[in-house]
Image (cartoon, rainbow over all chains, first blue to last red; front, side, top):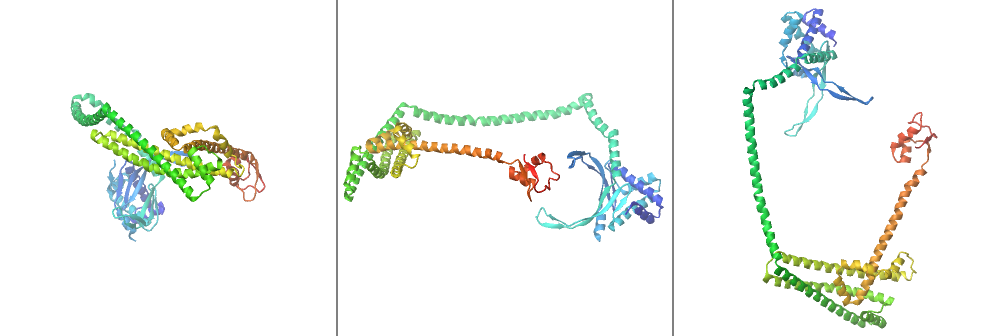
Length: 92
Length: 476
């Protein structure tokens, strides 16, 4: 499902205009991201939790050029589904 | 930092940022996540702008082991939601985390923490000195305690050491005193020499007696068996006069005598042992009344053992010499009629008379000079044949060694030459045949597949993997 389809669905559900839903969606994502960027974790009940995860720097080998490259450490957004969601998904 | 924000916090924030009522923000957010769950539960993946992709992934059944019981059991498979953040999100995250870190949020904190501590130490000296002293004091106290313990241990260790060392020293000193006393030593030596003399005389007598008995027995047997009278006469002469060296008779008599001597030797063994037993008994009888020393008996037993071993070695050597003599004689008998076909036998025979004395000397120390002389006195025939046989034995051995060395010498260069000859034989070119590859050629000419590269370096192929049949390949 694409972002557009998803937003349409949300709009239908909430009876909010499509433009408004777009705004709200992007602002919601940015709100979550901002919280994550500050090092906080965001837990949404019944859905799961988002938290920043640090990936250590690692060395990779390019077999064609036979050179080693260093991938610098970085922070990514990780998501873990909640237990409730797991049970709901595996019910069927 | 590191707070756990809830749904409420996010909706509040959303309401703040977008200027929407909290209620609306909440309903929207709720619908937002519910739809995600709905779409996921249908098995579809969902892509949300500004976050990433949620995907439903099935995890298969897998086997595991209960650590406590060791039982295998299956963890049932399940569906889970996998999330991959958008690249833009990750970039933004890193940009945001790096920016504050470098701007002076984290590093200054560290500096502030570290610097004040260093600065406070001199300023608030009286306040901090007290704890420092308190901290140091117990450390200082502990150290001497440990040192004292170590010292105690050392003293404990040291105390027993001298005692242990002194005791053996005393014991040794006592032994030394006992040994160093001239009277006891002289007595022991006298006893030893007397016993030695007795033993020697006993051995000689026993041997003489046995030899005489054997001679008489042999003569009687021959007389009874009615052996050829001439032979008997010869043997008699050989035994009594020790001058008859004629080839045939000497060989025969030697063989006969050898067998007899072996018997004699065996019997002398028994007599020797008897003599030794008597000697040992005498020694024990002599020692017991005088002194009960720990070491002298051991010395005597060791001496006795030495004598025993020497005698055994001598007897074995004599036996070996006689056996060798018999072997030599048989060989000589066989070779003479065949007109000396083998070459290596010639030098051995020719060298016999030339170097009789030299090899006899090295052989003497191995055995016992005195005992050899005794035997020579007893049976001059034996002695004469021992003398002649020993050089034979010891000359042939070096000869054999020399021959072996020569063989080795001849073998070695041959072995070395072979590879040298092989190298020039290798052709410089090879005509490709059906089914041949460079690897096979390398294997054929160089023994390894590694030379393929060397071949490729010299040659230029359109396609090294498919060389046409009949193509000439240069070989490095």
